[in-house]
Image (cartoon, rainbow, N blue to C red; front, side):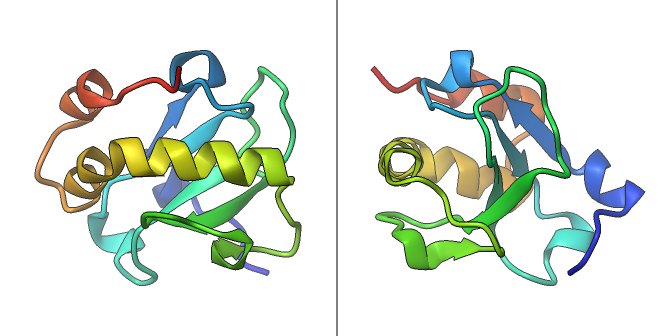
Length: 117
């Protein structure tokens, strides 16, 4: 298991569940030099707490139509989280990929993200 390094935190932005419409908080990344080693991903909290806890997350591949097989970690995500996350990533895929590719700033990314209904 790889633990987060301090440099990893500077390349991540947190998105609250109240902002996204998801049942959990997530962390999104710009590509940066550290993250290009594994490809586009988002970090998803394993519990629905309002408090952010980077140590209690799994990575999910950043792609459209994710399934449980796209979760990278030792803990599975509940079906309702996978379903909501799939809808959120499908809705915001172009924005999140542009952010990953360092084509837009954090502020632009946040302004473009759409909340689930």
